[in-house]
Image (tube, rainbow, N blue to C red; front, side, top):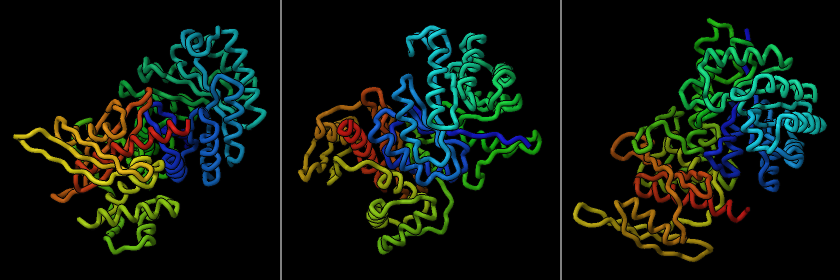
Length: 461
C-alpha cells in the first residue's frame, strides 16, 4: 500500500491574513488531523513570525513544520531561527524556474539561479537535516533547466523536491506525465502543488501520485488541492488503487469546518445565505453555565483555549444565551469570532438602526477606543451599509469591502447569524467574523473584527 503524504499550505495563502492566535489554532488542528507537513510562509516580521513558529513548535508533535525561505541568506537564517525548537523541522527553498519568473522575481539568469540554488540549499542544510527545493512555476520552465536546477539542489543536500503547476496550464494526464519525468530524474521524493483555478487540481494530483509522486500540497480554501476533497478521494479509492494517507478521517470533516470558520471561508456564493450544520456533541449551554462548563464544552470540540480566551467565550455564550441555548454550531462560531483574535482596538458599545421602505436607512454606532466612546451617524443604501459607513466615520478610514457573507448557523426563526466581512488594505485581505441572533449586529461585529486586525498589524509593523 502506497502512503501518500499530505502537506497542508492553508497558512501560505496570500489572500488571507490570520491573527497570531488564529495561526496557532489552525496549526494545532492540522497536527491533530495528522497532516504529514504543515507549511508556513516566509518570515516577514522576525519578531512576531519567529515567536509564532516557536510557540507552535511547543505543541506540534506529529507533523513536520516547514518554513519557506525567500531569496536572501537572511530569510534562510530567519527560517532556521524560527524552527530551532521544532521536533520535526524543514526549510523550503522556494524559487521560480521559468525564464520570466527568474528575471522578474529574482533578477537572475539561468546560471545565476543555479548558483543561488546551490548556495541556498547548502546554507539551509547547515541548520536542518530536512531541506525541500520547490520550483514554483515548474510547468512553464524549460525542461532541461528545471532538471538541472533539481539536480543542483539535490547535490547541495536537498532531501526532497516539489514542482508546481502554478498557472494550471496542464490537463491531468499531461501533468502526470510531466511529474513522472521529475520522479525518474530527481533521486529524492517528489511532491506536487497544483492550482485549482480550472477545477482539476485534485485529478492532477492523484494521477501524479500514480506515477510515483510522494507528496501532495493541499489547503483548506484557496485555489490549491482541497484538503478534505483529496483525503476523501484517498479514502474512497484507496483500496481499489492501493494507496492511503495518514490523515485522521474521523477528524477530517470537523477540523476542516473549524478551519473554515476561523478563516472566514464559506461554501456558498458571495451573496447567498447558507445554513451550517455540525455534529451536536450533546452541547447545550445557557447563561447559568460557568466558565469551567463552557471551557469543557469548547475542549470537546477540539479547541485548546487560554484562560483569557475561555473567559471571552464564556462572556459571549452568556450574551447569546439570553435569546436561546447555545449548541455546538453556535459555540464553534463564538470561538472563531471572539477567542482567536487580536486585541480589540475598537469595541462595540451600542448601535441603533432605522430602516423601512419609505425612509432612507440610517445607523448610529458607538465604539470605544482607549477608554473613550466615539459616535458615528450615517445614512446608507440599506441598514448594513449605513452601519459600515458609520464605523468608517468613526475610524476615519474607508477600507475596500472585498466580500460580505451572512450564514445561518442554526435553523428556525431564532437562528443565529454568522457574518463574514473581508476588507482589503494595502493589497492584503483581512477577514472578520461576527455572530448574533441579529444579522445586522453580526455584520457590525464582523466589520469591527476585521478593522481590529488591520489596526493591530499597522501598529506592530
